[in-house]
Length: 125
Image (tube, rainbow, N blue to C red):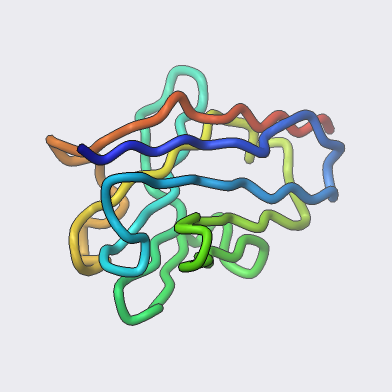
């Protein structure tokens, strides 16, 4: 059974940085593609960054150049380094494994994904 646990969120001023962590059990983070999803109040959950098995990375336009997704195989943990944070980055952040590759639909939530409790990121303007 796959389990994920997100952490590292908090309150930060605009322009600041945070690093989110996603600890994983039940699979190896370097054996799958993994996605960081965000869900802002009143909006649907959507992916903002994906890393596939061959370390290819993908980003939503809204975070490109500011966020970096990476993983530590030894710790079996996925990370999201977030720099130059903006008020509109305020959301709950979740991680999930989506299969082998960051397909064309990687930003979409699909049935059967495993979710943790998420971690709240709040950016003050």
